[in-house]
Each structure stands twice: as structure tokens, then as C-alpha cells.
Length: 307
Image 1 (cartoon, helix red, strand yellow):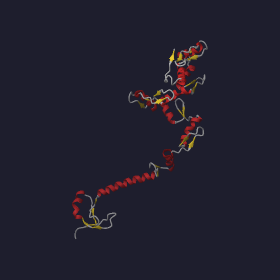
Image 2 (tube, helix red, strand yellow):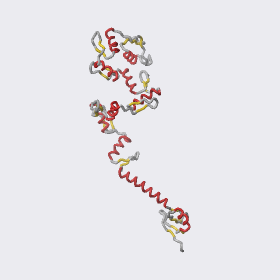
Image 3 (cartoon, helix red, strand yellow):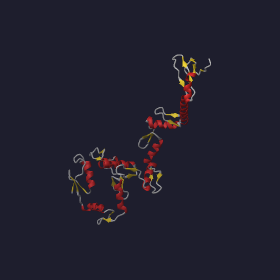
Image 4 (tube, one colour):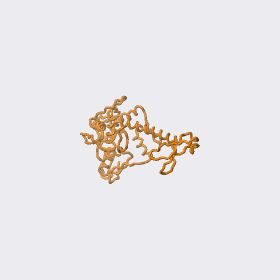
């Protein structure tokens, strides 16, 4: 016979019958790609292997090369989530913090456990008072670098968080989150004593001090204590800028309102009266604390005053 025959074997087939390529010459010419054909004895099917298959194989080889490089540079694979790491120590840390739930580092002061030594080291600063990160402008110090970064926005004026409703901007994301409740009216934080609701957990935490009697902020001058830091800050002005003087004891105040309240100590005036038991107080805040502690259920958390 004058016609040529192809006897290229197919992987997986053990016996082949040569097939005349001239029958497929037009197909090969049209595609400009070499074609290898053969018929298996078992099925009689004539598969065609063209350059398209070769191109796909080349692409597959390229992908395989990428996987090989990835495996080479990050040989340590997590058997849970299949993330890869360049060092075994990184994989071990990943297991501990993400999957294992182990917290092997324990604080000797308060017995709180942490997954990493760096977490424990940062926590220990709350006990030691160490604040290694200092503001280069006002010299204020911080426990964590993230807190310093947020603080610096006071000096730079940066306010990267914007309300999508009214476009007001904020320096911190939690301030924006608290602000959004103004638009939604949401008050998801409820006091378990008087059932009063608040927009943020911090507002609830401050309110709870009315019931517990906690006053964590102390004036270093006169030792007066306060529930909120803002109240202490305002109070400190009375020691720094004293424009209003008591005529009885010569004590000085920064605000006329503070002097007015102070004068009640001398006059005995107690204009705020409890509607439940009749107890009287110098200031409205004192009445509010009294109601919250003694009559929370009776007045449904609302302050009632008779003047």
C-alpha cells in the first residue's frame, strides 16, 4: 500500500489498529494542526488528538509550575483550612490562634489567658502602667501603637469615618457607630436594674455606676470623685481658672453654676426632692443616683423631683 500509517500509541491502550490518515487529510489541512488518529480494538472509536490538546497541556503545566513554586515558598500547609506558611512556627501559631483554641499564656495578676505571648505582653501593661508609645506632639503616652495612631488624628485633624446620612465625620469608627443610632433611633443596650435603654455599651457602662456607686475618677487636688472623666475634666477647671469666689469660705470656682451649687452647702438648701420617700438633695445628680439605687422599680427608672 502507498498510503502512510500512524501507529502512535494512546496511554492506557494495549492494542491498536493502524488507520489510514488520508481520510482525515482535509481536517488536518483546515485546522493547520497535526492530527494523530488510531482505532482501538475494543470500541472501534477513532479519537483525534490535535494541537489544542497540546496547548491545554502547556497551560496545565504552567499552572502546575505555579503550584510547585507556591509549595516551595510556603511548604507548610494547615490541614484544617489548607492555608500555607513559609515557616513551621507560623503554621503552629496559626493553629493555636485560629483552630486550636489553646491559650497557653496566662497573666499572673488576673489569670486571664491569651493565645500568644505578644498578647500577654500587651495585656501586662494594664497592670504595670507601662505606656511605651508616646505622641511626638503633646507627649501623651499609650499602651498600644493603635491607640497612638488614633490619638494623632487630634493633631492632624484627620476624620476618616463619615456618616452616610448627614456626612458628619469622625476620627474613630466606634464614634461613627454610636452616631448612627441618632438616625436609626436604636437603643439596644438595656440596664438590667432600671431597664433604661442606651444607644451604646459605653453609655450603659457609665450609667451602671449610678447603681453600683462606682466613681472611678478622682480629683488630685481636692479628692472629689466622679462617675465620668468628662465631669472630672470640667471640675479641674475650678482649680485652674477660678473666677467665681464663695463669700463665705473663699473657695473659688470656674463657673458661676458651680458656685451656686456650692452655696447650698452654706444655706442648707436642697431643692431636689424624691417623689417616693421625700429625701432631698443639693443637686439633680444626687437625686438621680438615689432613685436608681432605692426606687428603680417604683418610678420606672425616671427621676422625679419636687422643687
